[in-house]
Amino acid sequence: MSGTTDARRPGPSTGSAAGGRRPEPPEAGGLRQAVGDGWTIARRNLIRVKRVPDLLVGSIVSPIMFVLLFAYVFGGAISLPGADGSAPDPAAYREYLIAGIFAQTVIFGATITGSGMAQDLKTGIIDRFRALPMAPSAVLVGRTTADVVNNVLTVVIMTLTGLVVGWRINTSVGEALLGYVVLLFFAYCVSWIMAYLGLLVRTPEVFNNVTFIVIFPLTFIANTFVPIESFPTGLRQFAEWNPVSSVTQAARELFGNLQAGVPTPEAWPLQNPVLYTVLWGVVLLLVFVPLTVRQYQRAAAR
Image (cartoon, rainbow, N blue to C red; front, top):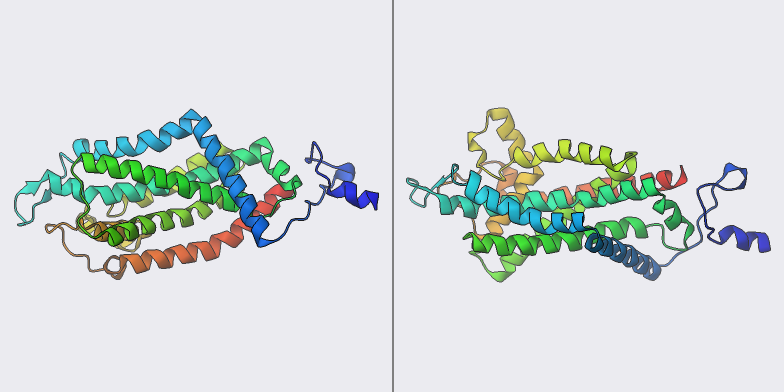
């Protein structure tokens, strides 16, 4: 009886055990405990963001930098036609631009989950979590939830910066809130991809390189910064079905930032951007939540 009790007690080191086998994690169960444990992990990650200046600066300064850079540096050379389709209007491009900046920034913000998972694996924190009497899903749920909170902060900062450079919301409060919800929902779904990749790689440095190679082309071969009608045929077709284009188009519609000088898209995903984005998000969750849970169990056991 005492042997059973000792096997479930967390020890100072769980990286190895007698006979080379890891001890089984303590029992934990119940939805209430799972939610509580997940929130505890989320709070840990949020406190870590506040205490690590690099992450905090990235969350606050990067959105401001992107809005100002694209609005006044690139925006000065990429003017869109005005409402009458004739004279280029820099203000029209700034209004067109902000939805794309929103989409790009929240997607890049989702990478915090993956880099955090890779860092926790490297430092052995995952082993410590596994030895505690907490729900097995708490680490993953807490990580992705913390990403949502961080993205809310980022969106608020970008909104204020956008208002300063002349961007305006031209729809109702309800439509604008739905625009923010679509952005945050898609970013949350991407967080599960990042969590999976973070558990798959061996070091945070490898994760950063992999995500940059994948996310950077996805956000640029899209309608985030310029209309896609000028793209070569192959790139234009890719951009039309790229979910980054649909989440951008959804935000643009819900904020009332569709410009009269930009042609109406003919592709189905861009004519139904909210539905297409939600479908993509549901598919990502159905695929990557079980994959990530399985990879977490493998990573914790190796």
